Length: 290
Image (cartoon, rainbow, N blue to C red; front, side):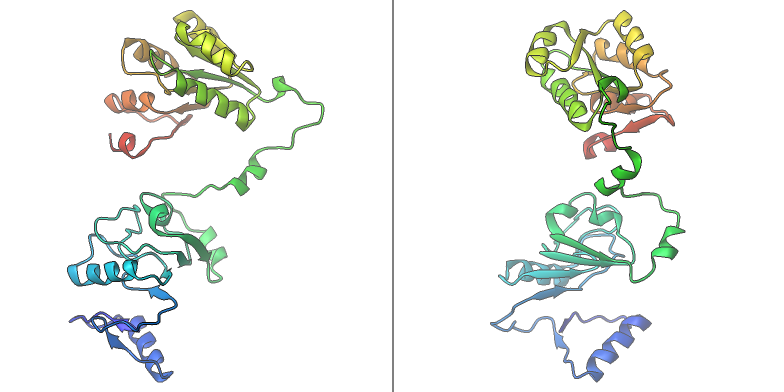
């Protein structure tokens, strides 16, 4: 056990753990000693979930040394240097092969740079599931396992008309690929009828690639009719931020059914932000920062 020296007294729980370790015959060495030649596993417990900034120099040196060692690393609760709230890595950070976290999954283990440094993530609630279920949080995690509760099994005799009508809006000049991938993703996800509104030049390429899609030129008339027809609207992929895209977004803003806004729809939203209960947004970090 290598311990980083500190002028501050240990918190009560840490002091009790230190005493228990010594009473059990364990030894504590200064962190700057030469490491043994034979190391089978490195356990990282340098820093905890309270970190808010880059680790100080002495800690950073230990992190770099651990990362350069061939032995696998198991991080306790969170890799040292990873911020538990955001997943940011403002300085040196442990590149763990495994991370074992407890009580609750920290947001920073699932966001930001976490996937680069956590390795395989293991979780144990330590028997506090009932207590956790009653806690309110600002963020929730959804996983594929939950889909079985949301999506009912389809009848053997069902057809595409039974599984929703989706309109996708976007694909300005030069961005037909964005709207094509969105349409294909909708089909793969199980949408029944998928209508794409885009530039006229994109119609033939999209129908050639995915004949299951219904592809139309985006005009104010086709948009108005499609909004009446649709159960759900997706807008933004390849939409652009010029007048063509702005007019479409202004029309869609009053849609009362579920919507998903992505890409350029979010860039335009950042100019005149508002909140809608029926809108899901899917920003990447740059879009979210706006």
